[in-house]
Image 1 (cartoon, one colour):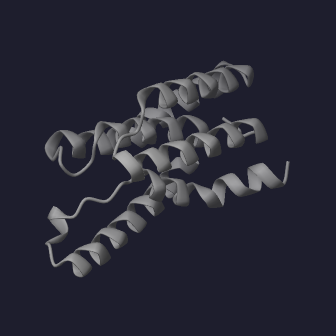
Image 2: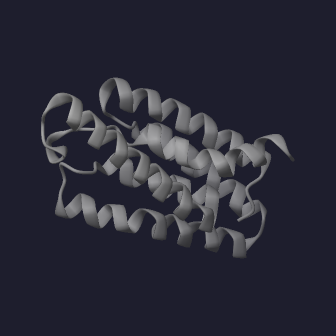
Length: 148
C-alpha cells in the first residue's frame, strides 16, 4: 500500500489519541483502533486488491511478533499494543517494521532510564508503548504529510 496524505493524517491522529490515553490510563481504546483499521482497509482497497492484500499481510506481520511476546509475557506487552502494531502495519506496509523497531528501542531506553531513577529492576518498570510507537513512525509519516 502506498501511504497517502489522507492515510498519514488518519494514522497520525490515531497515534496522537492513543498515545495520550496510554500515558494517562495505560489503555489503548479498541474503538479508536477499529475505526482507524476500517479507514486503513478502505484506503488500501481504493488502491486495488493487491494493495489490500499487502496491507493485511503487513498488518499481520507487524503485530505477530508482539502477539507472541504478549502471550508469553502478558505483563510485558498488552493486547492494545499488539492491535496498535496491526494498525500501523496496515497503514505503513513494510515500513512498519523500522517504525515499530524504533518505537520498541525508544521504549526500552525509556524503561531502562525509568528503572534507574526508581531503583526498581527494568522488568518491574511499566512504560506505555503507544507514545514510542508514535515517535518511531514520525520519519515515515512526516514526509507523507508534508510532501504530497
